[in-house]
Structure formats: C-alpha cells, structure tokens
Length: 391
Image 1 (cartoon, rainbow, N blue to C red):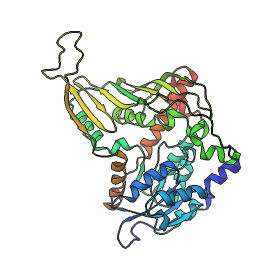
Image 2 (tube, rainbow, N blue to C red):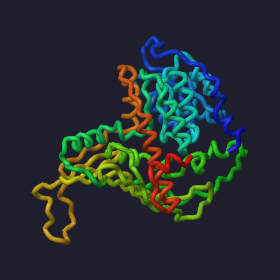
Image 3 (cartoon, rainbow, N blue to C red):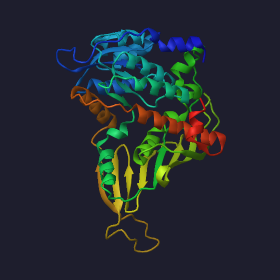
Image 4 (cartoon, rainbow, N blue to C red):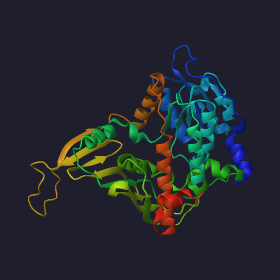
C-alpha cells in the first residue's frame, strides 16, 4: 500500500489534541462518536444509540457517501456533527467514547489516536492485520489512562450464555478440560464475482479491505478470531505453538486470500489442545460454535445458546446403533444478539466507573490467529516466539 493511501486513511492523526473527560453532558449519558460508518460501524453504532447510557455526538468517515450512509441509517446521526478527519472528532469536548469500526489494518493507528485523546474505546476486532500492527496497539494500550474502559468486539466474553457456561466450568462440573473445538463454518454463498465497478488505486484496499491479506489479515485473522478468542479465554493463556493445514478450495475471483478453509491445532500450556475448523463458502450451511470436552462432561457454546452435557441416568446408549443423545443436562438460549450485551457492559462500566482494559486479550487472540495462518502457510509447526519475530 502506498504512503499516500495510508495518509488518506489515517486522516492526519498525528496532530490529535486530547479532549476533555467524561461527564460533560447535562444528562450524564456517555457521549460517543463513530469512526468509520461502513457496514460494521453502522450496525454496531445503531445498537449503541439504543443503549440507555449512550448518546451519539459525532460520526466520521473519509468518504462522503459513507457519511451519508451513516446519517441515513444510524438513528440521530443526521443531527450530529460529521467529520472527515478523526482528529476533529477526537477533539470534540462532548465525545467521551469512540467506536472504532475502520478497516482492520487501521485499527492500531486509530486506537493509538483515541488513547492519546483519553477516550473510552470500543474497537472492532481483531487488534490488527499483522504482528507489527498488533504490537503497535499493545504499546498504545500500555499508555492508556487507567480510568478508561477499553473493550474490543469479541462479544462472546460478555454474553450471558457464555458466562453461564463459564461458571459451570469454573465450578468444576465438567471436570478437567484438555480438548477444545472451535467451528467457524460460514454459510455464505460460493465465492462472489469480481466487483463490476473499478475504484481508484488509492481507494481499492480501503473500501474493499476485506478481500486483501494486507488490509484484513485474511479470513483466519478477520473472521475466525472470534472462535480463537474463546479458545484462549478458556485455556487461560495463549498457545505455545501451532500446526495445521489450509488452502483454497475455489479459485479466487478477487482479492488475494491464501485460504478459504483451515484445520489448525493449537497447543496450550498444561497439555491443553485447541482445534479450529474453519470453512467458507458452504452454500447456506452455517455452524459457528465451540465445544469444551472435560473429564466429567462437555459444554457447547454458541452465539444463540449454551448446552451442558454429562453422565446422567439416561445417557448410556441402549445399543451401538442408537445414536440419540441423552446426555443433555441443561440448555440456555440467548435473549438477544450478543453484540448488545457487549455494548451494554461497555457503557455500564463507564457510567459505574468500573474501567477494564482488554487490549492484552484482544492482542493475544489476534496473534493466535496470525500463528495459525503462519502454520498452514509454512506447512510446519510454528512457535509463538517465531510468530512474534515475523513482523
């Protein structure tokens, strides 16, 4: 990517001025701004405007049509200030928090600017597209005001159903978990055709960043990182090494992804193994979940439910051909989209002055995704140390 492209995307962020602290609004709601009004910024930003503790104060995007989209689709966005330079938004006194929903490769720089401006930060996942970028984000996070909440779009960590399953695990009810599975099987259509309209070179990898390794990190970093984050969470650590396979089942019509499927094994301290099975282009079939296998039972986690299985009187099979599952002990279904749960916790933590900073967890999950990508690309075992030195 050219220096000019990066300068345009960053929006002159090296000249940012710190803004004032939370509490400037008369109604004590948290004033927030949206940086990036594309698809994700519009979706998450809309949920944020519906939160009782939040009030939209400004939006920002470098493209006029994206600003128009935000004004049209985000409730109340047509009545707030709109900027093309994120520094102007960060300098607005009544903006206490920001949603960063820009292309993945820009997360480190935009996160750095928001930290410098002393804002509460909700940054979309992952923490960056490459090792160098993630390290930059970690360096910025270490300098963050400890009174500020810093959260990332790893929504599972805030889902009531995931947290219920976590409590079952922590109470020892499934025993010692040594094997974890993450299924990230997406039911999108077969590979899309190349875009019909061409874009200037300076816009290509910003507007269509998801199709390029350099700007997205590839599918295992940009998409599968959700399941990887859950593996790290439950293991209580990052892996020490990884092996795996991956590649392209279908010719690429556009972009430069190196894979559309992966089978990665992560090795964690304590003899724990985590498996990622990831497949794209499955013609409508979708299976996104995690399974935690313990010595006393199994927990299955998903964005819409949790299930607890174990040895109960009806569990043994009547015969070898009877495959009906009688081991279900408990099931809970999600009441709503778990992004709303994550957003609610973000704003509650600010209002109730319970700051937390999950930058380290987000960075380690992103590093773990990069580790898996390196393992299938190199077709050999890759250690955590080798991955960190690969920038």
